[in-house]
Image (cartoon, rainbow, N blue to C red; front, side, top):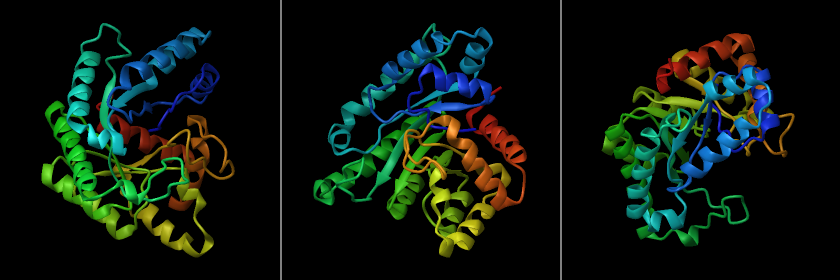
Length: 284
């Protein structure tokens, strides 16, 4: 399972252990947030009383580090990238085995979804031509960093398919995930033919009846060896929990939905997704 942990308290971590979660990825969004996230996770794991659960969680949890394209980070992109690489290198050389577990760069990418009242507060007025070009540059620099460090990338792409593809092709580092996939079948094929994995989140369960057949075709078009599932916690809780705060343990509903769409059991789906995680993130 691939998931955005957000932050889960120890009760959520214990549920993850009870559910035998194989892989959980705590996703970075800011240039300087890695060390803080790692310490919060370490403290939460330490507070788990059951030693077998504690070890299971330590085995499952990994981290990514990346810069989500906020206007502030775009404007400070050169300092941000320098800090990001420094922090990653520091983590990789840490004596703490948990802190060494960096699995990917990201999430990073392009977002042109304008919704000032939404959680991201994105307004088109904040994105003049210089910011839009800076956003692409920030994304390309992170692709370059991933290429340098030989890491997969967690790509955030929303209402920005052409710009995303332009950056991916420019750097030619086709290694990673198109996260919380939100485009159509034709766009999926463009990503798949370049070698990308497609990660589906709880939003697929929101599909209207009129779009159900289209969604089924998309879900079934993703090859077994390129399909991942994720939560994007604390966002995008799947039906029947839509509108509540999402957690990694809610992903069972997404598994059930996609398994039904693909005509297999949730257990079969879990096995193939776990194998894809092993391959992509080089998990032993």
